[in-house]
Image (cartoon, rainbow, N blue to C red; front, side, top):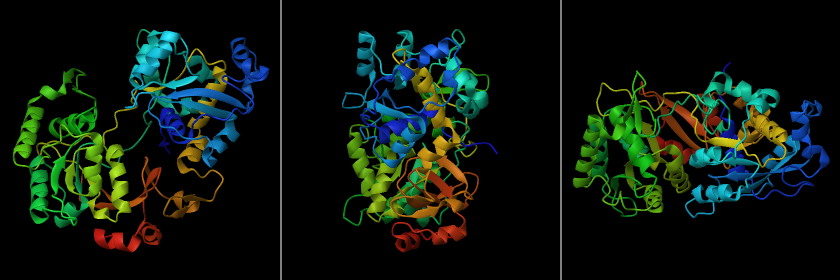
Length: 481
């Protein structure tokens, strides 16, 4: 059976971002203070076999996470990872208030001082040109069996370029994933879908009619606030996920390749000048003039956007689920489950097929690398290899290596039952009961979204699962299971 796993970067960045802070000095410093660990790189380069044995002696690696937030390495999962590997992470983050790592990385390059491992996002090329990243090809070949197993045929994509086939980063993105929920394009509140007898729109015209119909029937919220048809977060970089990316998915029916469309002949075109996108932006202008599109969509801050969506007064959005999921957590906590959102396969024309579910292979460009400052690259690659193993994946994502059940804030699901369920995709979510719409039919598939997974639920388990406001939410959603 094909393993559906996430990439190493996704695991390590999440571990660092959610679990790691300044790691305790477990008898070692950067690169390992003992003679044993400090000589690991020398042993590997001289061909010695001492490193072939598992080394779990304490060692702390400095790790810069360009996309993380402060936390502590003091929870059960972090302790279990340290127990399994001997590794503790001492994590640092961008200093800039907006989380922009460019200045931090520029300073590293100027001083020629780097952490042991680094996730640099868009600044990886700067590190490469400065000679800061080491080629991990030989390390992976000798010490990375799980890395090779996970990437499989897609290892080829990790090579830097045709001129330099070295592997300097392991991708942050998923490997062999199957996306079964539409995201990144159009969303609408479940309440609006319910009023349309769960018949979801497939074209932009149908989407518009459903929004207007719901606004006409519900001009104000229960709190007396004016309902908003559509809003966006477009005053900063979030324009890419609420305006730019959706434009390509909806108007061009093309997958997310940034600002580009790649045709069947592998020719690249700038997508925002296509006739289809011009028509889409004309549609947005009309929605603005008619008062359906929020007049503040282009000037409001992202915090303003999040507050509006989390209040339940926005009927429709065009956003990425990882962004608006924080709003849904608030809505669920406030008992407004029917005002959470369902992803829709909406396109400009009926003859188009929305490509949000298309898997194009592992995304490369952003990832985690080992720097030249790392004194023990062997232990570093072994640590990353462990995170790619089945044990490491289950330990982090299920957070239940030594327990017999998976616990979330609102329910416990026995591991025996979880083994029989279908893993759809790894994600970060607050527990919430929802349904998934298949873009090829109107069938509703009951699912349980937990803090790290989305699971398809058999009817029998659906009825037995305890969730927040179980009876109230089930009644409000009117799920026909």
